[in-house]
Length: 597
Image 1 (tube, rainbow, N blue to C red):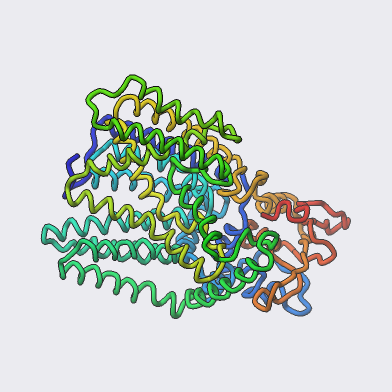
Image 2 (image 1 turned 45 degrees about the vertical axis):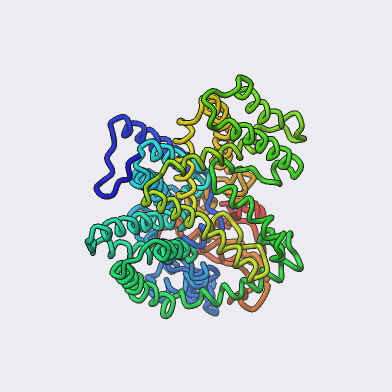
């Protein structure tokens, strides 16, 4: 395992073939059913922001709320927007979130249209980029093509990556850009160790730094890890000055304008308000509050919420939670695994192992099924975790060069920093609502590289361990594939937020029907749900929601003169009223919240 100091990553023909197959699998998982399920709440926020539209019409008062004006048209809805409109849209509709992704998606939509397939395909591209970058980073800094291939294969099938490639939100982009920033960070340090100043890389690193934070503010934790790495390992003043100047210039030129003049100036106010709002819900209504499950920020509550989030960062431990397996079964499984590890450790240096050992280890692992009250293969996977930890320990020991060990330390920092920050914020804000997988997603590539090192080392372990843990890996692989199938079928609430599959985008369906049936003189009626604001901030300019009308107009021709109005007598149906006969044609029935995702 030679550490690659400089030069591009090279690969053999067989490696390129395997990598191509991995990328093909990754692409298939990411485009399958890409537009089969309608956009949900967060995607709606993104889409209206890309068009400079504020949900509920704060910047469309002349369209919807002019006194005496009873009709509006798509042409009025699509009137040219100013920079102020886009700024207000992202402030009000998406709490000043992800301006870099919103702007990029707006340009993408101008080129490829606003359909669900096209808008989500941008996330597919970034998600594929994550697979490629994971491979490149692993190969360059472990010196092993095999580690790179294992890491890429894990990234290709990682459920979080598959799920969020199907979502028009900033996560896939921000993971890619933050991973690219880590790659550039290490390349810069390589060049600096050779006495060179790679000015182009400084510029690229500054851009990825700014884009990461403007993609999601929690992406800043990646650069906290970079800074800690510098403090631990770098003792060269010019490197400090060069990288410090890079961060400073990028902050002043790209970040400060957004956080002082642009919409970002409201994000900290919004976060403070949300912290108090969610804390109140955690103490008064933790379950049926309409925002999700949340608890007060006590140590037991925070740990309870954090453990499954941290476990699911690792492909091998995905799904191994107390809620899924039960406390007693978890204890039994870990005790069996520790017992198996004790046997392996006892004979780790033996020239020949006892004949009973290759039988005892798998028997101990599989024997948990005889005791466990929940009979599932993941009980065996849980029991094998101590042995996998031992293999990872052995893998780390294989990397002798200081640069390699530093790389492993950096992977560890990048792995834990986002999660530790979420825990600190949970204690500070006194609620657990923010402890969620999305906010630790920047850590996934580094967890996958460590697992790639583990699987590479497994091939050097005694044959009985290879077979035993190889079978366990296949068992976990079955559960990962089953989870990915549920994700693609829209039946994995943790990843897709839905247990009952969504239908195709109802607003796009309604718009298509309107375009086919509308004739001059007809009128389109939109349902109007009475709003129930929780506080002054949630109050809008009208007691009824215009969201269904806004979302449908996103898919109507921009120059259309269709007459449309709100129907405050009902809250579920879009009607087309024929001008000559007055006949009502049902365009779409939302059936309450059933199809309002």
